[in-house]
Amino acid sequence: MLVVCGEPGIGKSTVWEAGAGLARSRGFAVWSARASEAEAQLSFAGLADLVEGAGPGVLAGLPVPQRRAVEVAVRRAEPAGAAPEPLAVAAGLLGALRVAVGAGPVLVAVDDLPWLDGASAGAVVFAARRLAGADVRFLVARRAGRPTELERVAEPAGVARVALGPLSFGAVSGLLAARLGRALPRRVARQVFDTCGGNPLFALELGRAVLEHGAPNTSAGTGAYVIWACGRGP
Image 1: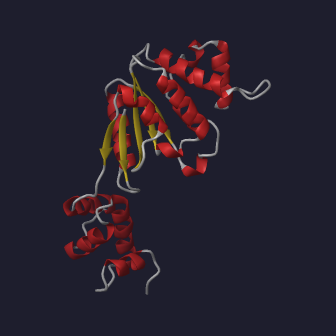
Image 2: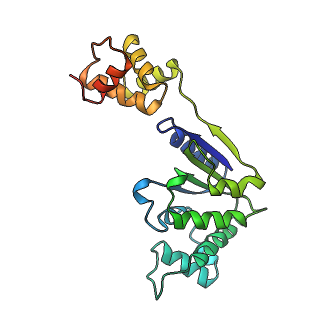
Image 3: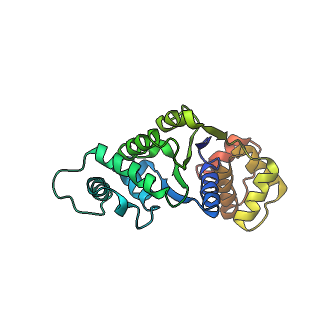
């Protein structure tokens, strides 16, 4: 398992997406989900995204009870009675991954892992515990902090963590020029850098504010710059 971690806006999703793309180029089937706070309470929302990466024959290769449970859970089939048991759904995910690796390696990639809804997270952890020896890899992104349950389950097979740090002044200047379509004056770029602390997302927000409103004429330090950029200053 590879874990990309760092503070908000530091570029975790960009690195995660690049990793998933690299895996595809090397022949992996990529089952991916971008978790979000807004969907964290929607049962099996993440699982629905993950199984989109399965080929058309993967679910068809499952035993009927497991296939039915997964299809109902992800709203691909109408329920015929009571909601499927979480164990049946989790077993279905495990079975689907085992079927999929028969055609080649699989990467399970989850961005913002802690926001993955509980039902989907439980199914993924259940499957990960039982995939020893199968060519299934995991790529996840999360904020810095304590390891998740999925990471603890994956520890015996190996977990590598990449902590992303702030960008350099040169990297921030290059990012601003590339994303904004023009280079900022060095003095302004330095103000942006000093204020954002090397955080690329914050740097872009400040850079866009500069282009829209012009650079502030202030000597009050980075605190005043932040207030101005957020539209709360004079």
